[in-house]
Length: 261
Image 1: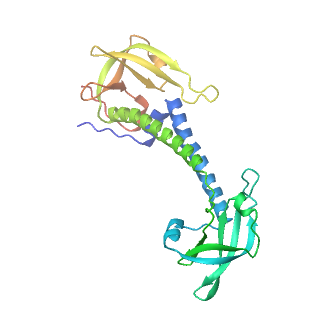
Image 2: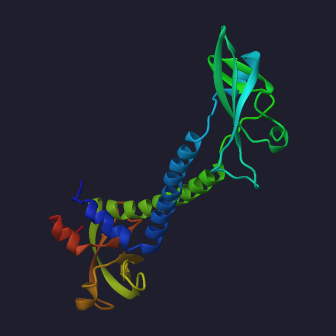
Image 3: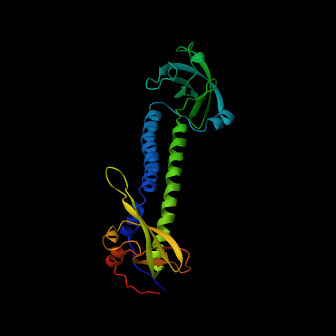
């Protein structure tokens, strides 16, 4: 069984001759991380600037009802929604015979505009956590950004998979393909990116055993000593359904032994 040696450099060489697919795959993943990481840091920073109570539904259903005295109303200045700020209500209530102080963030300008220190408000508490019953808890949410980041990540991963599938087919040929002799039919240039020239390659059409195929390569030495009608080495799969050009430089670098079949 043929099993030639390959390495990561070989995989990279095969990836970079498909610059458009490689670029969009990289951009999809990079853009999603660019959105996700800063957004997560911003979200954590904002959440730390106001109180947040977990398991509100459980407190609503199982909590103990009490009356609390409002001792402070503080606006969250770094968040503005249609000209209004969310507010943090600070209140005191009796808990097992002692005074307990708690905070609850809300955004309801119509209901809170008439609130003042000293007002009595109904609350519920459970396991040392409490909520103001007449108000819905305010929580800063930018879920739509996560959806956008997720969509770009998914696109990037799909493109990575497509790139991987193409490279895998060629790597498999490199490892196990049979060396055959083919004849060059045509050679066309792929210019790559305009300024960097990254991704420059050639598409070589060739014929072997009455089969016409195409393979992409960045070995420009082919055009120095080969022309249309000349013979060229190709690798053919065991089932003879796929093929590619024999990579001369990679073969020498990895010490392949040449055996024609």
